[in-house]
Every structure is written in C-alpha cells, then in structure tokens.
Image (tube, rainbow, N blue to C red; front, side, top):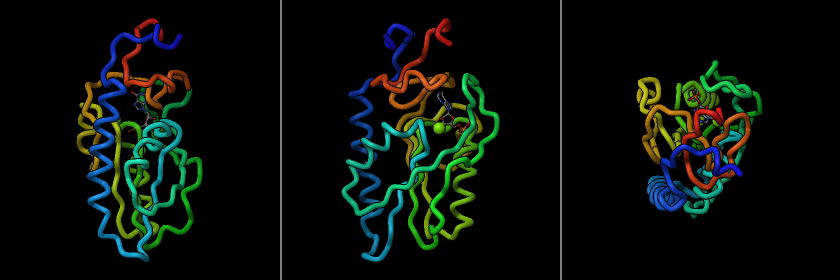
Length: 182
Ligand code: IMP
Ligand code: MG
C-alpha cells in the first residue's frame, strides 16, 4: 500500500481542497473581465499536474480550452532537475490568447521559465502561471509565478499527482517519503 511508504504528510486532502477553492476564486475574479472574443487557454504540464488541474478548473466557471503539454526534467528516479525540455506539443496558435500554465511544483524553475518564454514568443496576450507547490529554495522563489497554492520546505514530495519514478501520484495528500522508499 502506498501509504506505508510515507514519512509525513505536508498537506492533507482537506487543506488542498480548501486552498484550491480559494485559488479558483482568485483566478476567476482576475480573468472575469475577459471579453467575449478573448480566449482563455489552460496549459497543464503533464504528468504531475493532472489531479491539481482537474480540481482547479472545476473551481473556475469561465469559458476555457485545455491544452496539455509535456516537459521532461526528472528522468525516472532522478530527484534533481537535469534541465527542462518540451517533449509534447504546445498548441501552435497561441497568438492573442490568455494563457494560464498549471504545474504541480516550482523547484528549479526551469520548466516554468521555459514554457513562459516559449508561450510569450508565440505572442500570447497574457501568460500567467499557477503552481500547487513552491519549494523554499532560491531558484523557485526567484521564478515569477502569479498563483501559488502552498510554500513548502525543500524536500522531495509525492502525492496528489506528484511522483517518484511514476509511483505515488494517487496519494490523496502531499507527503514526504520515508528514506528507504527512495
Ligand atoms: P523544475 O523545472 O525544476 O521547477 O521542476 C518542475 C518539475 O519537476 C515539476 O513539474 C515536477 O514534475 C518535478 N518535481 C520537482 N520537484 C519535485 C518533487 O519534490 N516531487 C515530485 N516531482 C518534483
Ligand atoms: Mg512536472
């Protein structure tokens, strides 16, 4: 059972639900002035954001499109980023659109910086970023990010979509693994 490998829980499913409700409200208010012909495009970063984005978008009652992107930065069992690369397509036509990038966690910042640069280069009208978690490290704190769920200590976390070697995404909370599970 996945729960047996957990050392401690950082955010419970209840805390996550409350925070996502707040974030959804904030995002909805910030984008509600979009005009009828403005387009909102949510770009979730696979795979870690799947559970977060599923919950978040149901708290945002605005007309939106979803377009998934894949960025690789942690191959298999690595727990340190080795440089981000877009491996699954960004939508070709982002010119004039309002883009909200959604990711699970801000760590080195490489993923978010790369996506923001690429999406800006495609002439999106606005580009904003929403992450569930931000690690307390300089690189993360220095990466611009408009919406942040929780600031957490610099530890490798799993659950609520975040993985270790593609395991533990199905844990309902955000947690730190026992040393012997890594
Ligand atoms: P960054 O490019 O270093 O900011 O890393 C972002 C990506 O690395 C995230 O989208 C996650 O998929 C992954 N990642 C970073 N830190 C963790 C962690 O503590 N647990 C699980 N995945 C992580
Ligand atoms: Mg990721």
